[in-house]
Amino acid sequence: CSFGMLEVATSFILEQEFAWDVQAIGLGIACSFGATLILGIFIIAANQASLVNQVSVLTILVGLCPLASLFLFRSSWLRGSATQILVADAVIFASMFNACSLLEGFAINSAIDGTLYCKGNFLAAVT
Image 1: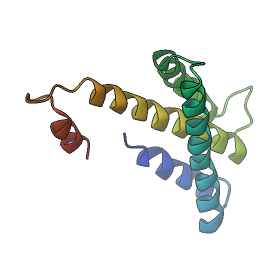
Image 2: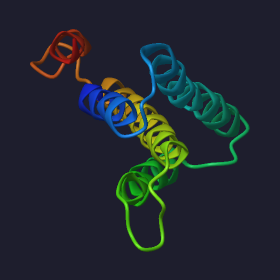
Image 3: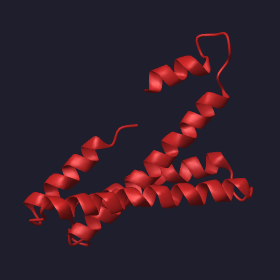
């Protein structure tokens, strides 16, 4: 999964519309990425405690992305602040990175040794 386009667009918006410098942009985006780690740890802990079903978690994560993307735009009910954009980024990054990780885990568990659909071919295709 590649999210470079969201990172670049966010950097551009923070620089052009909010006059942020490079260091502030880097710190803001790094904090957005930090949400990914926090959510991932929470998902792992909940999964190990058998509190959640992985498919349900995947459905929720994928559903959060379009909702969070609404906060990337200005509207009559959203001011369009830099914090709003970074929060939307944090939700999108965290949801999609963790969703991709779950999907890759499903694919590896579904691999069939000795066929075109083996783990080695999957891992070669992903990288």
